[in-house]
Structures are given as C-alpha cells and as structure tokens.
Length: 195
Length: 97
Image (cartoon, rainbow over all chains, first blue to last red; front, side, top):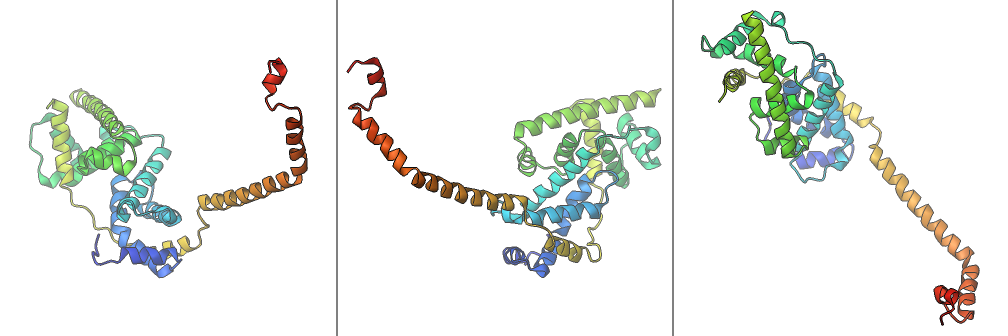
C-alpha cells in the first residue's frame, strides 16, 4: 500500500456514514492493491478499469458485512479474486493455443524453454510473462487461478486457501490438475515443433 | 524434477522477472466510483433482515391474539379432561386402571 499513515479505521467509519470524500480516499488508497490483482487475473476482453470498478462497488455494497476478523486489505483482496474468477468462468470458450498466435519474442522464449538449447535471458522476461498468461488461458479458471497464485505470485497453499475460500486439499488437487494439463500442452507443442 | 517441471520452472522464473507496470489511478476514477457507491441500494441481506424481523413481530402478535381469543375454549378442554377422572388417554382406552 502506498500510504502507510492512512487512517483506514477512521476512513471506514466515515464511509459507513455515507461520507463520499472518505469513499473516494478509500478507493485511492486501495487502488494499487486492486489493480495488481486485476492485472494478474484479468480475463480476456475485459477492461481493467471496468473490473476494478466492479470490485470497488462490491466492496461498498458488502461493507456492512466486514467485521474486522481479517485485515481490511485481505478482505478486499478476496472480493477482487472472486470477482476476477467469476469473470473468467463467464468466458467459457478458451482460444486454442497456436504457435502462429505468438509474437516473435514469445515463440523464441518458448523454443528455448522446450529445446533447452540456449539459456533464456532476463531480456526475455516480458515475453515470458505474456507466454505464461497465454498458456494459463488454456486452463479452467479455478485451476488457472491456483497456478497463477502458486507459481507466479509464490503464495503458499495456506495463503491461497485463505484468499479463495477453498480448502487446502482442493487447492492441491487443482494445482495437480493444472500441471497435468500444462504438461500435456507442452508435449503437444514439442511434437508440433518437431513435425 | 522431470523434464516438464524443469521447463515450466525455467519459464515461470523468467516470467516473474518481468517488471510490473505502474498502477496509475485513472483520472476521476475514485470520484466516479464513490458517487456510484453513494447511489447503491442497501445490500439485499439487510432488506431480508428487516423483512424477517417484521415477520417475526407479526407472527408473535398473531400467536398471542390466537391464544387470547381461544383461551376460554382451551381452558374448558383442560377442565373436561380432568373431569373424566384420568388424564391418561392410553390408560382410559385400554381400560387397565
């Protein structure tokens, strides 16, 4: 969070009393957090700003339900994650993953990873991130979320469980299922590359 | 670590190194969201809670009115039972007293 001195408790109290200035300050304060989550889990064809707006409106609607059992940013994170996953679930069709759709850099990174011929360089990081997102798009929304949190954001199983509300066994099952699907995808890509 | 795990880890480590784009607040975003939030109706569960409370009060009032209205009938029934000499219907039916 950008401003450590922000009086969150006082601000929430004023928001509950329908103070619009406080509501604006709360949005400004939480925007970096919400924006980061939205960018990580953004479904295709959904504008980042629209999704962030939905999350904030849900937050205001449910504010009376917040009882302070968890820190407020954690509570908002959970709303953000579930909103993103609802959007991902709404997009039932997933585009087929094809070499032809990759940019030159992405194809090069994938080639290096699959063939192991050349070490990837830090300069390939952006292309690698895009590539990972395209690969994750092939997974079911729930599985995608687990791999995103586990591998990209390096969260623990317990943290993912707290963030999503799924029990730890379910998180492990989803991670296993997602890895198996990714493995299959890698095998297909390798066979296509060879042919 | 199998071949896939090695490839995946290589890719994911590289992807994690990608710099995050700065999260800039769009112009007027906070004001727009705050204004929309002010116009939102109360959460549905609060309306339900209000209706449930009203329902409970009405139900309690109806129950009390019903008991008060039929008090004489209920009291007479009790008196009839005691007048038969036994309050145990099973004993009475089986005639084992």
